[in-house]
Image 1 (tube, helix red, strand yellow):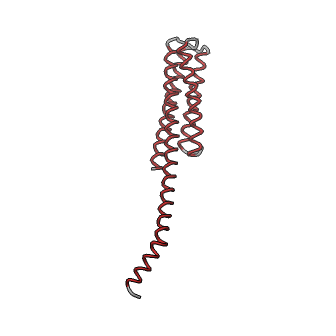
Image 2 (cartoon, one colour):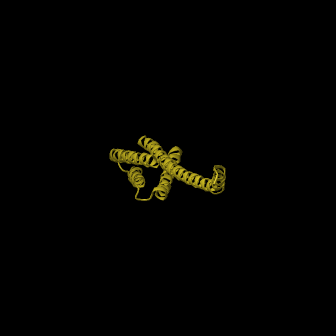
Image 3 (cartoon, rainbow, N blue to C red):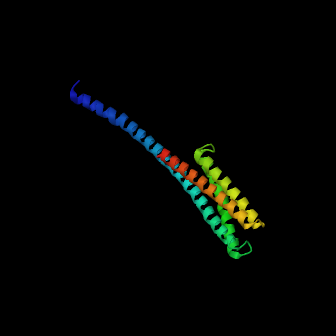
Amino acid sequence: MSDVMVLAIVSVVVTGIGAPGITAFSGRMEARRSHRLAIQKECRDALDFAAEQLARSQRATAYCMSLWSRGIMDGDDEAKEYLKRRNQANESARTAYGRLCVRFGPAAPVARHYDDTIECMRRLTDVLRGYRAGDTYDAWEHQAGAESAELTAAGDRFLNAAKKAVSAQG
């Protein structure tokens, strides 16, 4: 067989068989890459949403505590508004926990630390409820300070776990 004939046969085989195979393979690889990137974005979005809800809750709670420490209680319109915001933020934080469980699994460190943070929020809410019901200011201030510190520490543990989760995906 001549070199020209071999070249003609090889070119027919490569363009007729090889090119579609290479195209299909590269298409599958791109689809996998796109899917992986979409999952990573969903996970980052769930983490961002969760962190945002914690921050909203902490800001609203701190403002409520500031009002209450100055004697501005629930009957005041401003206190009512911020109490409503705090309750909404706490509820959104619970929703965010569900999203984290779906994306990472309930046993994942990021979900466990977020659940711990929500538990700290609940304990702080119980302390605040006691003061609003008539507990003494000194007892309330001490308990609220301790629970706030624990909430901050739990939030930091969640954020560290979230950073690790994001870097593990990258």
